[in-house]
Image (cartoon, rainbow, N blue to C red; front, side):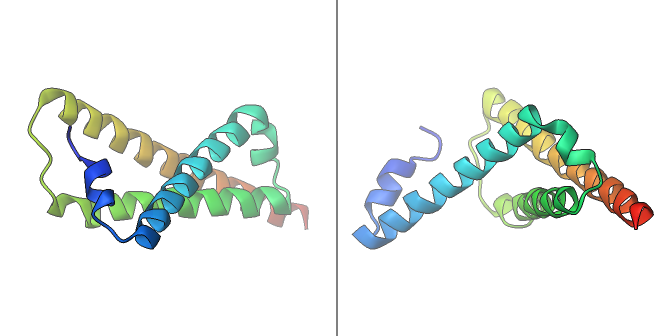
Length: 118
């Protein structure tokens, strides 16, 4: 196993175990929710409304923060040098950067539409 999270988390005190699990669920839940929003109501994410500005701004901040964290903190740790893991790393980083760029462009688009409508 690459990360051995199960055994690492078991070493924590029970409250800390629950905190780690809870935040993990929050992250998965947010990623899933953002994906559902993008798939189910894409038109609402680019219509220039105040809600579109707020939501795309929130999602952009989330993904930009994820990318910044990915490249600031994670390089300190070594991941086994296996081809499948390198492919996964490149794939995930490509997705994270793509999401960040797409949502930054969307928030700028929405701000321009919102200001033009005023």
